[in-house]
Length: 203
Image: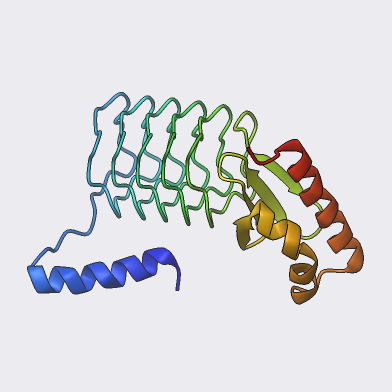
Protein backbone atom coordinates (compact mmCIF):
# COMPACT_ATOMS: atom_id res chain seq x y z
CA UNK A 1 0.00 0.00 0.00
CA UNK A 2 1.49 3.36 -1.01
CA UNK A 3 1.32 6.58 1.01
CA UNK A 4 -1.66 8.04 -0.87
CA UNK A 5 -3.73 4.87 -0.42
CA UNK A 6 -3.07 5.01 3.33
CA UNK A 7 -3.98 8.72 3.39
CA UNK A 8 -7.23 8.04 1.48
CA UNK A 9 -8.30 5.33 3.96
CA UNK A 10 -7.62 7.59 6.94
CA UNK A 11 -9.46 10.53 5.32
CA UNK A 12 -12.46 8.33 4.50
CA UNK A 13 -12.67 7.27 8.14
CA UNK A 14 -12.45 10.92 9.24
CA UNK A 15 -15.07 12.09 6.71
CA UNK A 16 -17.57 9.47 7.93
CA UNK A 17 -17.02 10.59 11.52
CA UNK A 18 -17.26 14.33 10.85
CA UNK A 19 -19.45 14.49 7.73
CA UNK A 20 -16.83 15.89 5.32
CA UNK A 21 -17.56 14.56 1.83
CA UNK A 22 -14.84 16.57 0.02
CA UNK A 23 -12.95 14.47 -2.53
CA UNK A 24 -10.80 17.12 -4.26
CA UNK A 25 -11.48 19.72 -6.91
CA UNK A 26 -11.74 18.89 -10.63
CA UNK A 27 -9.49 21.39 -12.40
CA UNK A 28 -8.29 19.12 -15.17
CA UNK A 29 -7.29 21.09 -18.26
CA UNK A 30 -8.07 24.43 -16.58
CA UNK A 31 -6.03 27.56 -17.36
CA UNK A 32 -5.04 29.10 -14.04
CA UNK A 33 -1.85 30.75 -15.21
CA UNK A 34 -0.78 33.57 -12.91
CA UNK A 35 -3.51 32.82 -10.35
CA UNK A 36 -2.93 33.39 -6.64
CA UNK A 37 -3.62 30.17 -4.74
CA UNK A 38 -1.12 30.42 -1.91
CA UNK A 39 -2.14 28.22 1.00
CA UNK A 40 -4.96 26.61 -1.02
CA UNK A 41 -6.30 23.21 0.10
CA UNK A 42 -6.04 21.13 -3.07
CA UNK A 43 -5.34 17.68 -1.68
CA UNK A 44 -6.58 15.03 -4.16
CA UNK A 45 -7.37 17.73 -6.77
CA UNK A 46 -7.48 16.61 -10.40
CA UNK A 47 -5.30 19.13 -12.23
CA UNK A 48 -3.97 16.90 -14.98
CA UNK A 49 -2.96 18.80 -18.13
CA UNK A 50 -3.86 22.10 -16.44
CA UNK A 51 -2.07 25.27 -17.55
CA UNK A 52 -0.52 26.68 -14.38
CA UNK A 53 2.25 28.91 -15.74
CA UNK A 54 3.52 31.33 -13.08
CA UNK A 55 0.83 30.29 -10.59
CA UNK A 56 1.38 31.16 -6.92
CA UNK A 57 0.73 28.04 -4.81
CA UNK A 58 3.18 28.84 -2.03
CA UNK A 59 2.30 26.75 1.02
CA UNK A 60 -0.57 25.00 -0.78
CA UNK A 61 -1.67 21.47 0.12
CA UNK A 62 -1.32 19.45 -3.10
CA UNK A 63 -0.81 16.09 -1.43
CA UNK A 64 -1.94 13.23 -3.69
CA UNK A 65 -3.11 15.71 -6.34
CA UNK A 66 -3.05 14.67 -10.00
CA UNK A 67 -0.78 17.17 -11.78
CA UNK A 68 0.27 14.80 -14.53
CA UNK A 69 1.09 16.62 -17.75
CA UNK A 70 0.47 20.01 -16.11
CA UNK A 71 2.30 23.11 -17.34
CA UNK A 72 3.94 24.48 -14.19
CA UNK A 73 6.62 26.61 -15.78
CA UNK A 74 7.79 29.41 -13.45
CA UNK A 75 5.29 28.29 -10.78
CA UNK A 76 5.81 29.31 -7.15
CA UNK A 77 5.52 26.17 -5.02
CA UNK A 78 7.82 26.84 -2.09
CA UNK A 79 6.67 25.23 1.19
CA UNK A 80 3.95 23.36 -0.72
CA UNK A 81 2.87 19.92 0.47
CA UNK A 82 3.12 17.79 -2.67
CA UNK A 83 3.58 14.46 -0.96
CA UNK A 84 2.31 11.63 -3.12
CA UNK A 85 1.36 14.00 -5.95
CA UNK A 86 1.38 12.72 -9.53
CA UNK A 87 3.63 15.07 -11.49
CA UNK A 88 4.51 12.59 -14.20
CA UNK A 89 5.17 14.28 -17.51
CA UNK A 90 4.65 17.75 -15.99
CA UNK A 91 6.73 20.74 -17.13
CA UNK A 92 8.27 22.31 -14.03
CA UNK A 93 10.97 24.28 -15.81
CA UNK A 94 12.20 27.23 -13.72
CA UNK A 95 9.60 26.50 -11.03
CA UNK A 96 10.42 27.51 -7.45
CA UNK A 97 10.04 24.58 -5.05
CA UNK A 98 12.23 25.61 -2.11
CA UNK A 99 11.32 23.59 0.99
CA UNK A 100 8.54 21.72 -0.86
CA UNK A 101 7.49 18.29 0.42
CA UNK A 102 7.88 15.94 -2.55
CA UNK A 103 8.07 12.69 -0.63
CA UNK A 104 6.50 9.77 -2.53
CA UNK A 105 5.74 12.07 -5.49
CA UNK A 106 5.75 10.68 -9.03
CA UNK A 107 8.01 12.87 -11.17
CA UNK A 108 8.59 10.24 -13.82
CA UNK A 109 9.24 11.82 -17.20
CA UNK A 110 8.80 15.34 -15.80
CA UNK A 111 10.82 18.24 -17.20
CA UNK A 112 12.71 19.88 -14.32
CA UNK A 113 15.13 22.10 -16.24
CA UNK A 114 16.21 25.00 -14.04
CA UNK A 115 13.79 24.14 -11.22
CA UNK A 116 14.84 25.45 -7.78
CA UNK A 117 14.74 22.53 -5.34
CA UNK A 118 16.88 23.70 -2.42
CA UNK A 119 15.74 22.21 0.91
CA UNK A 120 12.93 20.25 -0.77
CA UNK A 121 12.25 16.75 0.54
CA UNK A 122 12.58 14.13 -2.21
CA UNK A 123 12.59 10.99 -0.11
CA UNK A 124 10.97 8.08 -1.96
CA UNK A 125 10.11 10.27 -4.97
CA UNK A 126 10.17 8.65 -8.41
CA UNK A 127 12.33 10.62 -10.85
CA UNK A 128 12.78 7.91 -13.44
CA UNK A 129 13.01 9.40 -16.91
CA UNK A 130 12.85 12.97 -15.59
CA UNK A 131 14.97 15.72 -17.16
CA UNK A 132 17.10 16.95 -14.26
CA UNK A 133 19.24 19.48 -16.12
CA UNK A 134 19.99 22.51 -13.98
CA UNK A 135 18.32 21.14 -10.86
CA UNK A 136 21.37 20.56 -8.68
CA UNK A 137 20.44 16.87 -8.53
CA UNK A 138 23.12 14.31 -9.38
CA UNK A 139 21.59 11.44 -11.36
CA UNK A 140 23.16 8.28 -12.77
CA UNK A 141 22.61 4.69 -13.77
CA UNK A 142 25.45 2.30 -13.14
CA UNK A 143 23.52 -0.90 -13.74
CA UNK A 144 19.86 -1.88 -13.76
CA UNK A 145 18.46 0.99 -11.69
CA UNK A 146 18.14 4.76 -12.02
CA UNK A 147 19.59 6.72 -9.11
CA UNK A 148 19.66 10.33 -7.94
CA UNK A 149 21.35 12.30 -5.18
CA UNK A 150 19.98 15.45 -3.48
CA UNK A 151 23.02 17.29 -2.06
CA UNK A 152 21.07 19.53 0.34
CA UNK A 153 19.57 16.43 1.99
CA UNK A 154 22.57 14.13 1.54
CA UNK A 155 19.90 11.73 0.28
CA UNK A 156 20.67 9.03 -2.29
CA UNK A 157 18.00 6.88 -3.91
CA UNK A 158 18.98 3.84 -5.97
CA UNK A 159 16.02 2.08 -7.53
CA UNK A 160 13.39 1.94 -4.80
CA UNK A 161 15.84 2.25 -1.88
CA UNK A 162 16.47 5.75 -0.51
CA UNK A 163 18.81 6.41 2.40
CA UNK A 164 21.41 8.91 3.55
CA UNK A 165 24.75 9.02 1.74
CA UNK A 166 26.52 7.86 4.91
CA UNK A 167 24.21 4.83 5.04
CA UNK A 168 25.03 3.96 1.44
CA UNK A 169 28.77 4.23 2.06
CA UNK A 170 28.42 1.61 4.78
CA UNK A 171 25.79 -0.62 3.21
CA UNK A 172 26.01 -0.51 -0.60
CA UNK A 173 27.76 -3.88 -0.84
CA UNK A 174 25.39 -5.76 1.49
CA UNK A 175 22.39 -4.07 -0.17
CA UNK A 176 23.63 -5.09 -3.61
CA UNK A 177 24.05 -8.72 -2.52
CA UNK A 178 20.55 -8.75 -0.93
CA UNK A 179 19.05 -7.42 -4.18
CA UNK A 180 20.83 -9.86 -6.50
CA UNK A 181 23.25 -7.37 -8.05
CA UNK A 182 26.22 -8.87 -9.86
CA UNK A 183 29.70 -8.28 -8.37
CA UNK A 184 30.43 -5.90 -11.28
CA UNK A 185 27.23 -3.90 -10.65
CA UNK A 186 28.08 -3.65 -6.95
CA UNK A 187 31.58 -2.47 -7.83
CA UNK A 188 30.25 0.23 -10.17
CA UNK A 189 27.65 1.49 -7.73
CA UNK A 190 30.22 1.54 -4.93
CA UNK A 191 32.54 3.61 -7.09
CA UNK A 192 29.78 6.14 -7.82
CA UNK A 193 28.75 6.34 -4.14
CA UNK A 194 32.34 7.07 -3.13
CA UNK A 195 32.66 9.63 -5.94
CA UNK A 196 29.53 11.44 -4.71
CA UNK A 197 30.97 11.49 -1.18
CA UNK A 198 34.12 13.13 -2.56
CA UNK A 199 32.21 15.67 -4.67
CA UNK A 200 29.76 16.55 -1.89
CA UNK A 201 31.65 16.28 1.45
CA UNK A 202 29.67 16.70 4.66
CA UNK A 203 29.70 20.25 5.97
